[in-house]
Image (cartoon, rainbow, N blue to C red; front, top):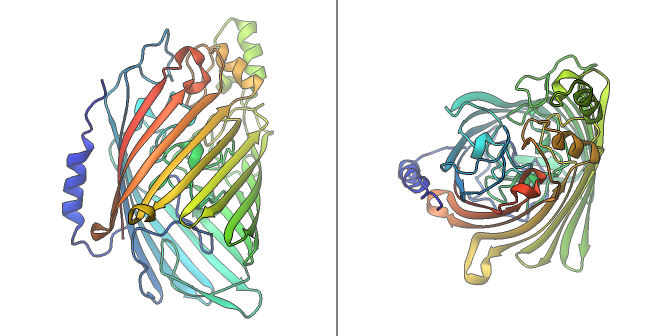
Length: 465
């Protein structure tokens, strides 16, 4: 039996408490769309009037999520629990921006996160709640999500006007420009954007739909890093490059400031085009991570030699790399209807270091507004995704090894297959939306022996000012 959600009472109380709030803002591992990124989704709030030198926003997201009872032949330390109660997650973020001088602004985002994911955010590589972190403490904690400076240099005289938005100060902005971003942020603030599938607060919740699954993007446990991003932006083409820090160990909370020992580089090219009257965008991304990773093959070999369970933590050493790529496309197919797809790959020889244990992934989805049924601010989305791992990664898990998110103690390999459907109901009077969500998961953690299937049902409340 599915546990009855405890979410609804909390949602009602939150709405009652925020109905007369003045300025209130969001928080998560997947940050807001950066300036000038294409967006086919209108914000839940109405565009603010020009705010001069300041930008102030707030978001809060609660997700209550549960799954059906399972009957499986065995479980490991990192398996999805056969039976568990519903899990509630919460994030709250203030987005504070201040213009410094011509073309420059500083952005400061304090954030509070609490609650937990199903099975402590373990047991499924494409985890079903993008607002949860792999942290064992459920109590809400205040931390610094972002603090960075952005400097824009105009290329040519043409200007557009930016509206006041999350991490965006209102005012004129060059149509063509070069930008430098330095400080603490999420790499996903700038890369692998998608108008239909990128933000688990308002769109699909699954990790492998909010970002390219095989992109092991640089981040600490909460999804943030320190470094720099360079951008070259024109109306039809853009290029971005970043160099950022990686955590001191896999899924670690602290970043390694010994840059020569651990760092990550990401390059992305973006092209916008039109098919008739319908706009489309294609993004090609490549990445290279350098960190003291262990190879899965050496861990399996040591386990065989010693008769022990293989453990990557015993064999970590400097100089290992992980490389990969991603392709990301979105296409408007009719007014208020859009199609998206992603494919991604990494070499899978060395252990996953930051995001999740996916070595190759493909997804396809469709999103529509509610305009056809006279609910233009509502959203309906449906998507499917298939995730896989390399032969070396399979052998490691089959021998009883554990990563930082999956490990059943054995493995009967099969692709992890996920389908997700959500409907976002706009409550514009409250600057909010409520979204029921359903995910169907076959072969969680790539294990046919634990295929379930898993039915995950969720209710999300998102408030944004």
